[in-house]
Length: 252
Length: 266
Image 1 (cartoon, rainbow over the protein chains, first blue to last red):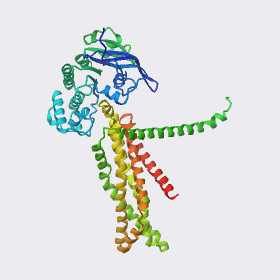
Image 2 (image 1 turned 180 degrees about the vertical axis):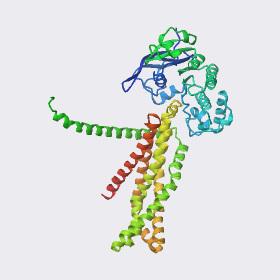
Image 3 (image 1 turned 90 degrees about the horizontal axis):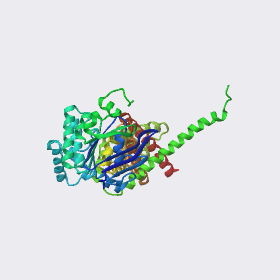
Image 4 (image 1 turned 180 degrees about the horizontal axis):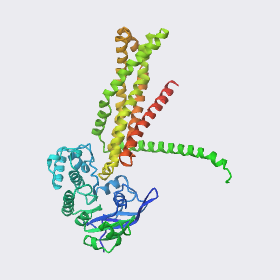
């Protein structure tokens, strides 16, 4: 019997004000796999993640996590499903008003001021994992560089030890060296923690480094999916145009 | 030449008015659902007492200087106006009575409401709006934290508690401002002024002021949170949310002030 995918999207569609963003999207992510979705800006990559997380409700289709339908979940059932996920947002989305240690442990406390000493220790341990030390614990997000904010956001995403982590454009806005540091961190976290990872990016170096497989999203559908080693010789005209950054081709 | 269509020309403005009315009712419905959802979720755990106290300090304590200054200048100006107008028909002795009634019934609650709306409603809309456009609200959801409980309810309840306390303070400071001007500049007898002030100080008036203040606090926080929560479109969207929050809070404060006054005295 074939194993059940960790995440399964079946015929998922979403339209915003007449603009079709997802158009019958089908995708399966296996347990322990790291999959990257590439595609142009506005191709529906972020919407895909938000649909899986229940932040956006698709107009049509089914989304299953561990076999459980998540479309239409709300309240405690939605919270239970979300407990499986960690998410690194594109702009880090750290809470400006809270110190770093409370940001990192937010998923464990849900913002309540409980068990301060233990939570500081938990924050320190997770920050260490992403290469930051205790000196940042009491700082505010605005006092950190963009790269450090990404690391803190990573620490926040992994602190509750999720089964699945989503990375939304993890290297956007970073210089190539800092981007590579983040890529290395993602690879080591995915390997060490044994999580399932879904990354959306248009950074080809990042996709090749952190993903086992890469899928290309175009006009709301997956037009190619394959191993990362085939990214540059996929034989797919959409992928070829995209990875080579050509203006001419089927993508307009 | 096409035949004129008088019916269509007549219907066009009616259609526009109809659209406006529908949009207005839709907006009222959205605000009502937002408020009910906040209250319904706030009664269930987890609770955030720390956030409530934080907001109480932010809305109440940190607004006191601006509220105090507004009240003292308004009380003094009111005393001067009553004196100037009253001197035309030998009614200068009404200054303490009109100051206390005017401050407690109208100026205290309304001015505090407007000042706090300008200061707090805008700040709430800007903060929550920025959280929306920087995906912090999405981050809260993925971290299994209900933004209604964590962000909205503490602000709403803190404003409802803080405003009456601030109106009490503003009334006292405003009456003091009137006394100061009357005694120092207009040479009223201090003991007589205070005796008349006490005579016209009514518990019913304070009660109405507290009710008004609670209602204004609710609208101030509701408008700030609602417009912030519905922000879209980056920095421009945050700017729009802030402006809409302040304008709608002002309108609701003035309209509800009239309604409460009309209900009590009508």
